[in-house]
Amino acid sequence: MADINPLVPGPPLQIDPEVGGPPTAPIGGIPPRAGRPLARFGRIGPNLVLVICGLFFAFPLIALARYSLQNVPTVLLGAHNLFDKWSWNGITLVFHDPHFQPTLYLSLRLALGTVVLTLGLLLPTAIWVHMRLPKMRAVIEFITVLPYVIPAIAMVAGIIVVKPHARWFLNSDYSLIPFYVILALPFTYRSIDAGLRSIDLKTLVDASRSLGAGWGTTLRRALIPNLRTAIISSAFLTTAVVLGEFTIASTLLKNTLPTFQATFLAVNAQAGYGFNLLALVATTVLFAMLSVVTRKRGSRASRMDAKMGDKQDPFKNDAVAFAAISRHESGTA
Amino acid sequence: MTTTTIPAVGGRTISAAPAARPKRRRSWAWLGLVPFFAFIFLFLLVPAISVFSEALKNKDGKFGFDSMREAFRGQNLEAFKFSVKFSAGAAAVGVVVGTLLAYAAATAKRPKWLRSLVTSFSGVAANLGGLPLAFAFLSLLGRQGLLTKIIKALGWDLYAGDFGLGEVPGLITVYSYFNIPLMVLITLPAIDGLKASWREASSNLGGTSFTYWRRVGLPVLMPSLLGGFLLLFANSFSAYATAKILTDNSKIVSLRLGFFLGGDISVGQDAIGYSLAAWMIIIMAVAMGLYWMLRKRAERWQT
Image (cartoon, rainbow over all chains, first blue to last red; front, side, top):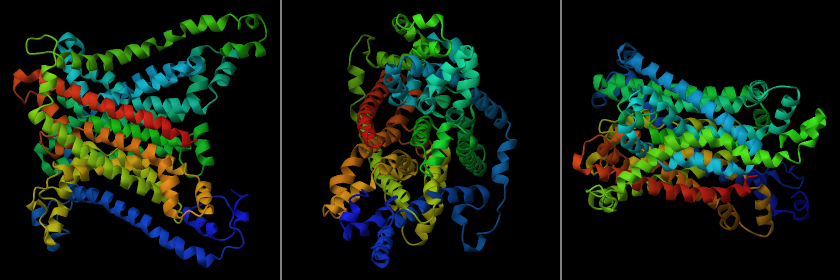
């Protein structure tokens, strides 16, 4: 395009700045005053979109925060008592509820189990596919989207059908773990697959093997450190999904954190809302941590990120987007 | 295959092998996938197949399509229509606003942090579904909501008509909260794929901004936008917890299925519940299948 521009003077160059055209260095002849007003005018639409979206996303959070922190019913709220009765009570009450701790611990154990089982199953499989069966990659990728085809609530229907034949298994709280692994499959596989694509797997394995390492050592000392970003992000996203899973747990009557969260409202409405505010904050913190952790670790993918400036790795976005879908399907807190 | 490089390093005995090995290796390589496929079979396919095996039973327990037909009739059909309506609406709003927002963020130059703010926030907001979001909207737009009160003070009673968070406009509003950021995440790579040189080429040929979008921009983005629409549709159609907290409207298919499974609807109709689940799976399969095809097309421009 650098070849074309100098040839055609005038009009096209004015449009260039509006598009946000990249590296083409501004060529001497553009009168800055001719370009700028146009560019500014062109920004009105996008800026309006940004502002309206900002308001739309802020409002529900503000309303939830007010409801949880201020003990004044909305009906009675007015200019005169806008600053009355603000307290942390709505948030701290939940910690004194006897059901809080056991449900939290169960959800944490389920999250840990799901992360371990996911990595134990997917890491070897994905590495094997990349090394030995590259033709199967498309097939595996397709299989990992299947959990979206079967919505969590439909999966529960299936579990209920099978239940009489596998009571010994399904009666245990931990029987949720394999189903959570399935639920998380679309994004856990995607992020591990993206991680594997960003490293030179064959060279790493060959180098390690030729130095005399077995498969275990290769995995532990050569592959896992290089796949750190992918592993951490899939672990985070899985944790986020499991800690919020409501659909399966509530229909199968398991006492996890989200099912407690839904019933706690009946105990104390304000504290119920406060707990949800807390859950929102926790989710936000979890995701903020994810982006910090994955940015700092020095894998090749994140170095690529840095090179691409603020254009983030599309595959990471992809994994986050897929995680979001799993979360909606299954409940999420 | 990997062993082929080892001879280069180590040098001796193995160097004879490569010719023979690949064949023997390939025939056994699939064994490495057995645990994965066994897992998928047990925990994904078995539940799915058992849904269909129950759905395809008549009252006398023999194979037949009676309950599948029944699950697509009367109130059940109304429920499917209602769900498709609000899911399509929520997906359309998500696609349009999400694309505009992504475009605004991608082209904004002034504050440099704007783009990363929008992407990071989208990652979080897309994941804020379920209970907390439902409660946030109840406290904002519920009967006693903050915004409901403010709007009423301005002279417009939101609940005078048949507005409700469980009706179509209400559900679209709430679902937009995660659909819009989800669309931003999906569509950003596509928007980044629009090369500035295409726009220059278009204007060099005398095209206006409008012609550029009509002849170049939109056609290139189209697979991504349609794919996004299908994904958001599937996302809204199968969402359960958000809807469950917002309303007990049994016109929403996922909630209706939940009522069947929870035993809230008469016991003799078990098969109808499974047939609802089966229909849900079929609809999702169509949506996701189309999405898969479009996605493969969209990836062409994103290298």
